[in-house]
Length: 165
Length: 104
Image (cartoon, rainbow over all chains, first blue to last red; front, side):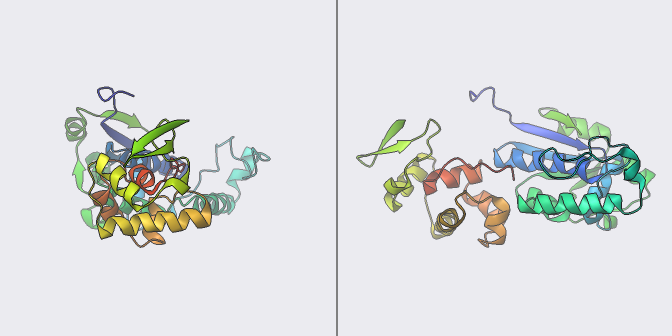
């Protein structure tokens, strides 16, 4: 890719709070920093759980309404969707996925956020959601730089590619 | 396969400049490769390069940022200060190893 067309900045919106919804955003933000691309993460709605101290390391895989769910062998046996609602199935799927991720050196959410922040990535929380969930800065992990309105988010992203997850 | 002339020697590299034959690598080559990327190697840089070297010999892959932090004891912030822009790719090039293949 030529210098002029090189991607310079990304703003990644994380809007969902299940484990499999949060990690892609974190991996993309971290991967951007590794490529010398500026990156910001903007957490909104249930995505906000990924930066709430009490919640961030307890995110779970969504097993209800997820027809793609299968055992972690190569394209393993799929799980009937009704099984996803059985108590403990989400916890089981979560622990399986965390085990596989650990093998790939993908860190737990809190450590990942710290890594991205140390790498120079910025972490924002969405003001509307913060107000809606009655949260304050004390509820967030220390890496959160600022609570932003959507307008401020667009201002900060004016020269960035916006990625919604 | 491409070759690159550095310090009067010809070394084998791939199209992105990663060394393809680690036996051709030495500390002088590392210093010269770093200078090409505007990096003057210090003891702190060598700590990273030595760790990548040790870890590659053990595991056969270039370690990622987390492994460099947890096993190599090099904080992520410091890694980005030492090798700005693309820390792992830059450090792998200077260390004479292939393009890093991990996503994290």
